[in-house]
Length: 145
Length: 402
Image (cartoon, rainbow over all chains, first blue to last red; front, side, top):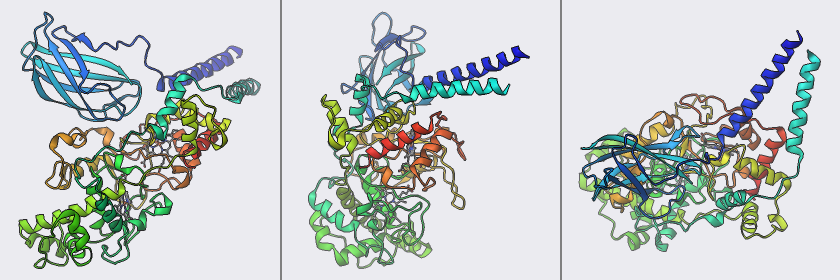
């Protein structure tokens, strides 16, 4: 009998800890080891990708553009690519508030992504699906606002 | 068994008491940054409105103010924008559902700093202030007018003021007294019989009325509150004094708002809104038509002839980013509504898009319970907070209302 009560107490304890952990998770700061690099190889290594906001600093709540620069691993600019954009907040389980699009190829492997907005502070992911003669590949960048 | 359970609950109560009884410590640097981000002082200057070349013309704003209070532009001669958007009531009417000629399906929205909102209405079915202002004019339950009715009214009563801003009015003498694409059957038929040129000329006049009203609305702004005076002092490293000194309870509420209760996820920035649309599980109102919020609105704003990309907008397509890059599909749009500003909210119950919730305390209760949405999925996760914490949240909300 007594050991049964122990189980009950243990279960309550675990549930409480889980509840606390869950509520913490919901408002957790971004993981400290988050890779914030603005340049990195794509997942399969087909491209070297760099991203930069077109007009300097990014402000919460403002619609803005990014420039994506694509190179092959040996440093040649990649032209003729199509880039699809996705993203969101991994800790909140929601996507981007807008539907950004690649709207221009600027030459020398540079592409304009229009219509990005971050409507909350915190950890955001920007995901690019790249499709070019060299092959299809993906890359994910982390941003903290 | 009872003893064991009760000792567990005593332990829980004691622990909760220990957690909540202590005096609030000094704000950390991170908290100070968050506080600063919520202050009205952090609001950037009002950006220009590229869709409306009259937006910052004082004569247009003055004309717009006249139109805002003009009752003769309604079909029954007694409704103006100010019937529902009352000057001394934060430009709202304290009713769950707005009333003029008829009763509408939604709660009247307050108008402070509305010019900063990329999408208008609870569901964002308009994308500029001037496009928004046109809708009540021809909505049967509001002004109940129509397009030629509005144009004839201006010609008869306010032609001089109109023409000084927008240039000569077109010849309206051959046009029916009542015609419009959204009116009753007779009005629709009369509209269809007009030539394309006539319709466009009337639409031009109509859109200009919206542009004047929008110019006026740009001047409606939030006033500083106790919280702003507190935030401004904290930001420069001064001790807040007089009414700027928030009580321990209010500071506790502020911490909950920006921390554990996570209200700041949506109610962020100096206006306490992310200008976005969320399903927060607000119940439907019995007797009203089905309301899917943003899901329906995206199609409406796309097909609105007065939108940013339309013929009456002064903007180049490049300036229409909000419309061009809006999310147009996905489950997150169902019953999603615009995050309202919380400034002044304590002073204007009832709450939510159809006045579903009566008191601020009940709003907190809603977030604690996080009920499922009648359709679509609520983004709200249940909160576990104490009675004392609920009261602290309410106390904080009052500091951004007075």
